[in-house]
Image 1 (cartoon, rainbow, N blue to C red):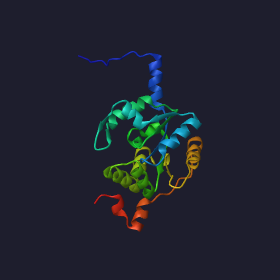
Image 2 (cartoon, helix red, strand yellow):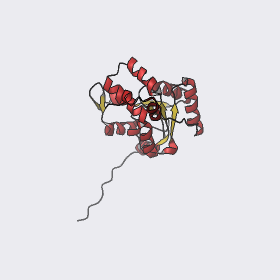
Image 3 (tube, helix red, strand yellow):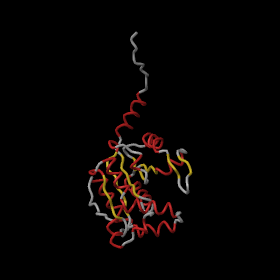
Image 4 (cartoon, rainbow, N blue to C red):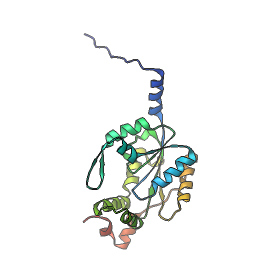
Length: 208
């Protein structure tokens, strides 16, 4: 007996929707907590008339998380499916989980905001992060984990890092705006590991 494939009839609007969501090209602003990505993203979205998608709000709004030790453990697989359905070519995605909820072919360019770990430490203290949460995020910033993971996901040619440590918000916005409009911007060199090794501060930023 020959088994034939089963076809389902779908409407023209449904076809258009499938095409749209398979060919969109996202703009992304990511980075560790405390780097200023949400402030910058809101300004950029307004200036360029982009739909802002906040990954954290999406995760909480759809309940794809479990509460951990002072953190939210997110189901990245489910979150990625939701983001894929919500996103379009006019979307700006913001959040530190960006490298884990996008596909290479659906990203136009990504900006990773970086910040001096000594300054981040003060930010986390003001936010009253637990020691564990603070040290994990500080270690991630020192090692450039978000930047590395973004490059690994979408490629070096689509990923740009900006050191926001001593820049005004308007300066950061201008650099990102140039990238999104012209497809290029001057990238910053970042070596926090070299900085803390020089100061002999490894124990300040990593668990031993």
